[in-house]
Image 1 (spheres, rainbow, N blue to C red):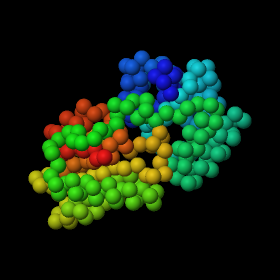
Image 2 (image 1 turned 180 degrees about the vertical axis):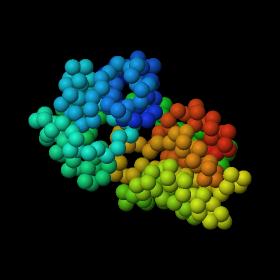
Image 3 (image 1 turned 120 degrees about the vertical axis):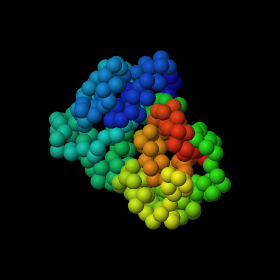
Length: 278
């Protein structure tokens, strides 16, 4: 899709959709924001677009057709919905039925089915990283101090473990310190993963005065990166620091960083490195 292709940004909660909308507006690409009622950030109210209820596909397709959009980006957080609260009108029934069935297979399956329903109407699904490539982590040191050789060993091991758990559809994030796996992410999310680290024995983890260990985030092999790219933000850096870690790593071009200037400045302030591995 070219930059002239009109984009519809379906905006869940959080800062990520705001960054995508801001970038698209700044680059003069034609676009609209489809705000989800009660969920999308208020900062999106100033962008051209519409507001609809979660799951109202009939109205969504009406908007996309009227606005003559050709591409759709879905990003931001959306809690697993209660399908019984959705409009069960004839125009929605088939789409909701297939999505509800896919949802039994987990979040990845649900997201893929939502994308499939939208794509079946002739729309191109575009990832947040495609709509705003500035979000992607680059290769090498991005912020903070140079990692030690020991930290780089932990980084490589953390990515290896993350790849393994991702292959089992468990999670995206892993913490490794001294080549020992301290925690793997399941359904609790990265924030709760990091908050477990200070509860572990002091001899196997780092501290604020003597940092040790690395957080790695890596996509699962089954994930469609257009729909769910691993993401870090300011709170990730703060939680990683509180856990006594020395740094955060991701695979080059496979990790989104929300509000890069603030994230990089905070990492430098706290003494954590952020690194993109090839």
